[in-house]
Image 1 (cartoon, rainbow, N blue to C red):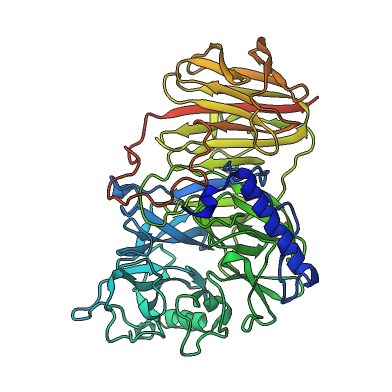
Image 2: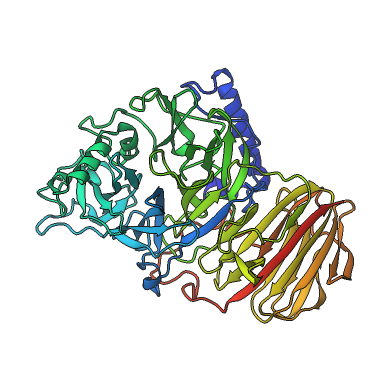
Length: 630
């Protein structure tokens, strides 16, 4: 058992604080923004390791949606039946979002492996993925390297929009060993490329670069070299990619360039970059490693930024459309427990602060597999040159538990506070469109959408759920206050299956007020640690709830359809203030936690029973949401 598994919450927080103090001491003589410390985080860096939200606030208006929910029993629903899916990349081109990710049968770094792409016109509704780089088959007579067992793919880069407008997709083929290892250097075959055509089809597969550490070339690989193409525009696009040393630096840790292809000789893993206002380029790698460049070719010596606490789950940085900067990462130095997913922001690309949540959910891992770390991880945004979606939003893609693929749209400017009263009725929103100011968590089988119900002029927010192990969730932040009156109307489509839990929380995610539409036809609430019945409810009926909350002394009252049904119920846990309401079609969860074993025994059967089969659909409509501070 590792040391971290022996530590409790207080010990982990103490270690986090110690790391911050050590980092501040270490950087006390470093100039922020210099080659000695390109980036610095100065905000509160402590998270609560016992809860998925980490005790943090939300980046208001973030919409997180599942691109692909893996399914082994029905591969036709996902384009394949491989259950290890990871390392996605994202681009926007030809009016569509494109997400590209690798996929293995069940384990990390084990054959067979392939790459798939999913597309979407709005970033919310995704087409079924298609295989674009299939499992590699060597030419007849070509044998595997001694000690290896097969071929699979690895990605550090996905897309390149060439100066001539062509969209290229790339991937890296390597050999799997009998023990856990990366398919790099002498194990690598090389990087492949093909074109995405504007009609949604794909061109032939070519190699664009062979590993400089091995003897692979056109004579012993299954695909021709790109210069064999008869399409001059495609060759021109490939030539442009090969000559772009800043973009191809993303390839460095897969093939470290014995032939001098790269302009750097040392770096970290998973390179990405952004440009500061002064023109300098900030390079970022895993484990909070960063460096500076004046020209995008030569970088300063990469150094670790000690005020950013993170491990191997990738670090993503970019300029945002409001003229500011953002870095996204998992803020804890525990590689197997990569949650929550947070964003910090900066005015100058040097000093970052205001750590807030992007996605704090950690659903159960449905399938077993080696090195399937918990949480939303390996995040990637749209790298410079890979498209510019409409609007000011920031787009991210990542894997969840190295199993499913997700996308989040973060509202820009990033903010975490609300001032004034809230009055939401959804009538001015587009059905199926963005849900302004709400934080949405929407799995494929538990979507959340604005709908024309009860009419096109009187819209509502619909939470649906047929997922046996996940839920739909919608969160509304309001002004932090000691006392508030919260009103909402809820329409349960059914009363004999599915639940809706309504929590009023404080800024740290503590849940003093807990109300539940239960599947036994009862509306319930917590009085301290006890659940009490409020009244029965019927399906296909609107219920107007009004909750009067008072954090001092710590009680709340509930009225339903104008009738008071509970008065002075005790908080389920003490808080000083409240600031958000959560609607969730499942029970609150805090598992897996930091001590949940990360490496279950591998099996070709689902780790969780019936994970591939939907349960009966439950539906809850939400309308006329208001919060008034008292």
